[in-house]
Length: 134
Image 1 (cartoon, rainbow, N blue to C red):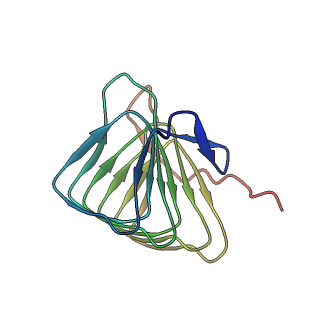
Image 2: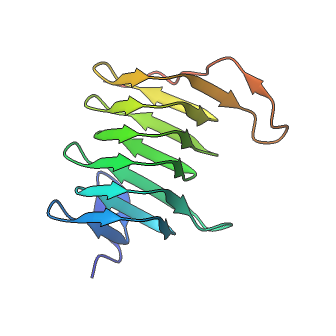
Protein backbone atom coordinates (compact mmCIF):
# COMPACT_ATOMS: atom_id res chain seq x y z
CA UNK A 1 0.00 0.00 0.00
CA UNK A 2 2.80 2.45 0.85
CA UNK A 3 5.34 1.10 -1.63
CA UNK A 4 6.87 3.98 -3.55
CA UNK A 5 5.05 6.56 -1.40
CA UNK A 6 7.21 9.41 -0.21
CA UNK A 7 7.22 11.83 2.67
CA UNK A 8 9.69 14.69 2.70
CA UNK A 9 11.70 12.96 -0.05
CA UNK A 10 11.95 9.66 1.84
CA UNK A 11 10.36 6.46 0.50
CA UNK A 12 7.88 4.87 2.92
CA UNK A 13 7.45 1.10 2.94
CA UNK A 14 6.00 0.79 6.46
CA UNK A 15 3.84 3.22 8.43
CA UNK A 16 3.16 3.07 12.17
CA UNK A 17 0.14 5.36 12.33
CA UNK A 18 -0.75 7.79 15.12
CA UNK A 19 -3.29 5.38 16.69
CA UNK A 20 -0.80 2.48 16.86
CA UNK A 21 1.13 1.36 19.95
CA UNK A 22 3.65 -1.44 19.42
CA UNK A 23 5.17 -3.39 22.31
CA UNK A 24 8.20 -5.42 21.24
CA UNK A 25 11.13 -5.22 18.86
CA UNK A 26 10.61 -4.14 15.26
CA UNK A 27 12.99 -5.37 12.53
CA UNK A 28 12.58 -3.76 9.10
CA UNK A 29 14.19 -2.72 5.84
CA UNK A 30 13.32 0.12 3.48
CA UNK A 31 11.57 3.20 4.82
CA UNK A 32 9.79 3.15 8.20
CA UNK A 33 7.69 6.19 9.17
CA UNK A 34 6.54 6.31 12.82
CA UNK A 35 3.67 8.54 13.96
CA UNK A 36 2.59 6.25 16.81
CA UNK A 37 4.43 4.71 19.77
CA UNK A 38 6.98 1.89 19.87
CA UNK A 39 8.10 0.36 23.16
CA UNK A 40 11.03 -1.84 22.14
CA UNK A 41 14.07 -1.87 19.89
CA UNK A 42 13.90 -0.68 16.27
CA UNK A 43 16.46 -2.54 14.17
CA UNK A 44 17.29 -2.53 10.46
CA UNK A 45 17.83 -5.86 8.72
CA UNK A 46 21.53 -6.60 8.15
CA UNK A 47 22.84 -5.66 4.75
CA UNK A 48 19.66 -3.95 3.55
CA UNK A 49 19.06 -0.20 3.15
CA UNK A 50 16.86 1.28 5.86
CA UNK A 51 15.64 4.72 6.91
CA UNK A 52 13.73 5.42 10.13
CA UNK A 53 11.69 8.64 10.28
CA UNK A 54 10.14 9.53 13.64
CA UNK A 55 7.38 12.12 13.17
CA UNK A 56 6.83 15.00 15.58
CA UNK A 57 3.98 13.22 17.38
CA UNK A 58 5.80 9.84 17.36
CA UNK A 59 7.59 8.24 20.29
CA UNK A 60 10.09 5.39 20.65
CA UNK A 61 11.27 3.95 23.95
CA UNK A 62 14.11 1.61 23.12
CA UNK A 63 17.38 1.28 21.28
CA UNK A 64 17.54 2.21 17.58
CA UNK A 65 19.99 0.49 15.19
CA UNK A 66 19.33 1.88 11.71
CA UNK A 67 21.75 3.27 9.08
CA UNK A 68 19.79 6.49 8.49
CA UNK A 69 17.73 8.02 11.31
CA UNK A 70 15.57 11.16 10.97
CA UNK A 71 14.10 12.27 14.30
CA UNK A 72 11.45 14.90 14.88
CA UNK A 73 9.63 13.21 17.77
CA UNK A 74 10.57 11.82 21.18
CA UNK A 75 13.12 9.02 21.55
CA UNK A 76 14.28 7.49 24.82
CA UNK A 77 17.20 5.16 24.15
CA UNK A 78 20.52 5.03 22.39
CA UNK A 79 20.78 5.51 18.63
CA UNK A 80 23.32 3.62 16.48
CA UNK A 81 23.33 5.02 12.94
CA UNK A 82 26.02 3.66 10.63
CA UNK A 83 25.36 6.37 8.02
CA UNK A 84 23.70 9.54 9.33
CA UNK A 85 21.39 11.06 11.93
CA UNK A 86 19.18 14.10 11.43
CA UNK A 87 17.76 15.79 14.53
CA UNK A 88 14.94 18.00 13.26
CA UNK A 89 13.66 21.08 15.10
CA UNK A 90 11.13 19.19 17.28
CA UNK A 91 13.42 16.21 18.10
CA UNK A 92 13.64 15.27 21.78
CA UNK A 93 16.28 12.62 22.47
CA UNK A 94 17.16 11.12 25.84
CA UNK A 95 20.13 8.85 25.15
CA UNK A 96 23.46 8.70 23.36
CA UNK A 97 23.64 9.14 19.59
CA UNK A 98 26.33 7.14 17.77
CA UNK A 99 26.74 8.47 14.24
CA UNK A 100 28.96 8.87 11.21
CA UNK A 101 27.39 12.19 10.09
CA UNK A 102 24.92 14.26 12.12
CA UNK A 103 22.69 17.22 11.28
CA UNK A 104 21.06 19.04 14.20
CA UNK A 105 18.55 21.82 13.64
CA UNK A 106 17.85 24.70 16.02
CA UNK A 107 15.23 23.65 18.56
CA UNK A 108 16.27 19.97 18.76
CA UNK A 109 17.14 18.74 22.25
CA UNK A 110 19.58 15.98 23.16
CA UNK A 111 20.10 14.78 26.70
CA UNK A 112 23.03 12.45 26.18
CA UNK A 113 26.21 12.39 24.16
CA UNK A 114 26.98 12.68 20.45
CA UNK A 115 29.52 9.95 19.73
CA UNK A 116 31.24 9.88 16.34
CA UNK A 117 32.13 6.40 15.18
CA UNK A 118 34.40 5.94 12.18
CA UNK A 119 32.53 3.22 10.32
CA UNK A 120 35.71 1.69 8.85
CA UNK A 121 37.95 1.64 11.90
CA UNK A 122 35.39 1.64 14.71
CA UNK A 123 37.33 4.50 16.27
CA UNK A 124 35.52 7.20 18.19
CA UNK A 125 36.37 10.82 17.40
CA UNK A 126 34.95 14.29 18.00
CA UNK A 127 31.60 15.44 16.59
CA UNK A 128 31.08 16.18 12.90
CA UNK A 129 28.22 18.64 12.33
CA UNK A 130 26.58 19.28 8.97
CA UNK A 131 25.27 22.81 8.47
CA UNK A 132 21.55 23.11 7.79
CA UNK A 133 20.48 24.95 4.65
CA UNK A 134 17.82 27.59 5.06
